[in-house]
Image (cartoon, rainbow, N blue to C red; front, side):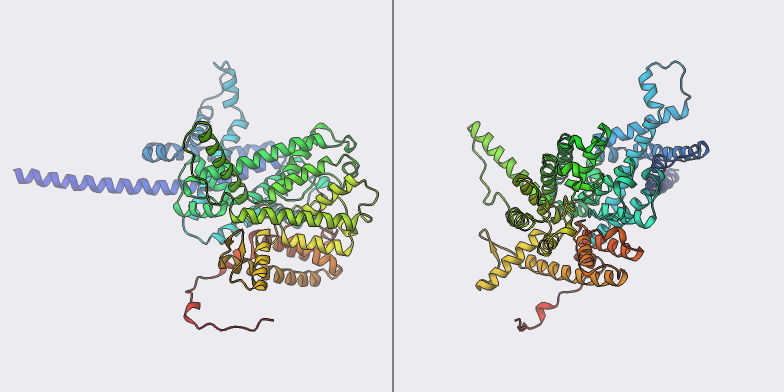
Length: 615
C-alpha cells in the first residue's frame, strides 16, 4: 500500500515537473515569437505613420491604414500584458520610469478601442485626449521607436562586426530617407528618385551637396525629414539607439555597452548613460540656443514671415551644428539680404559649426574637467579635504584638437583675407571682410556653407580651401576630413623623424605607435580614394573640367558639401558615384575595410626585421 502510494506520488511529481518544463518552454517560445512580431510591427507602425503624414489619402485608404494600425496596437498591448504576466520580476527590474509611462500610455489606448465614445464624459479633457488619433499615433510611435532601438541593441549583442553594423545602419537610413523624401507632401512638385537618394545620402552623411534647389523643392515637412536625417547621421545611429535602450530599460549587453563606450569616449560603463545624456542634452541646448539667436539675426530685408523665420532658424541651426551645410533660402548663405546685413548671422553660424566640429571626446573631457573643478571648489568652500587634482586635466587628444583647430582657423582666415580682399571680398568694410574671412575659412572644414561663390576664388585660395576640406574637424565629431587629430599626429611624427627622436612627443606625452600607424593609413587611403574617384568621375562625366571634378570628389569624400556649381549638372552615374563617395567618407574607409576583412593571426613578430630604402 505504502509503496503504491509512493510510486503514484513520484509519478505525479514527474508528470508535474514535465508539465512545468513544457509550460516554461512554451512561454519562452511565445515570448520569442512575440518579440519578433512586435519588432516587425514596430517597423510597420513607423511606415504607417509616415504614410499618414506624407500622402494625401482617400477616405477608404485612410480607413484601411487605420485598421492596420489597430492590428499593431493589439500586438503592442499583448506584448506588454504578456511580459507583465509571465516576466513580472524581470520587467520590473529592467524597466525605467519612461518605459513605464509609454507602456501605461499604450494600455490606455485599449479602453477607447473597446468602448464607444460616451456622449456625456465624466472628464471631457481626458475623453478628448484618449479618443484622439493624435494620442494613438504618438503613443504607438513612441513604443515602436523604443522597440526598434531594443532590436538594434540586441543585434550588437550578437558580436557582429561593429564596422558592419555602423555601415549597415547608415545605409538603412539612407534608403529609408530616400523613400520618405519621395512622399508627395515632402516636395512641392515631386522629385526623381535619383535626386531623392542623393539628398538622403548627403543628409545622413552630413555632407551638404545638393542636386536640387532646396528652397524651391522641399516643403516644411521635407525640410523636417532632412533635419532628422542630418541629426541621426551627425550623432550616429548607435548613439541614438543605445541612449533609448539604456534610458528605457537600463540594461543592454556588456558587448553593446563596450561598443558605445568606445564610440562616445566614456571613461567607464558606469558613466555610459550620463555621458550619452550629456551629449544629447548638449546637442539639444546648443541647437535650441542657436535657433533663437539665428531668429533674431535675420535681417528685415530677407522678407520672411514669422513662420518662415521659425522654419529657417530651426533648420539652419541643425544644419550648422551637424555640419550638414543645407540652407532653405534661395542663394543659401550668399543671399544678398544676409550679405548686406550686420553679419551677425555669420558669427552665430560660425560658432555653431565650430561647436559641432570640435568632437564629442573634447566635450566630454571639458565636462569632466569642469565637474572636477566644481568638486574642488565646493570642498574648499566647505573646508573639507579637496580631492586629488588629476595629473592631466585635459587629455592629449583635447589639447591636440583644440590647438590644431584654432591654429588652422587663424592661419587660413588671415590667408583668405589677404588673398580675397580685392577679389570676392572687394567693396566690403574691414569688419565685413574679417567676418567673411573667418566664416569662409571655417565652413570648408566640413560645414559646406559659402557666402561667396567658390568658383570665383583665386586658384591659390581654392587650393587652400581643398586642403582645409581634406583636414576636416575633430575626431568623433560632426565634421569630415581625415580629422585634425590625424593631421597633428602626422606632423608630430614628421618632426620626430627630422629631429631623430624615437617617437612622436606632444605635451610631455608620447603618442602610441598604433595611433601613428593609423594616421599614416588614413592619410594614404584618403589620397588613394581622391585619386580613384576623380578618375572615375572624369570618365563618367567627361564634360566636367579637372578642377570641378577633383573639387566635387574632395567635397564628397570628406563630407564638406561645398561645390563649384557642378553637382546639379551630374548625370545618373555621376550622382551614384558621389553617393558612394559620401557614404565612404562618413563611415570611413578603414571601417569599411575592417568590416569585410577577416581576422588573421599576427605573424609579423615571427619574421626577421629588415630596413627598406626610403628617400
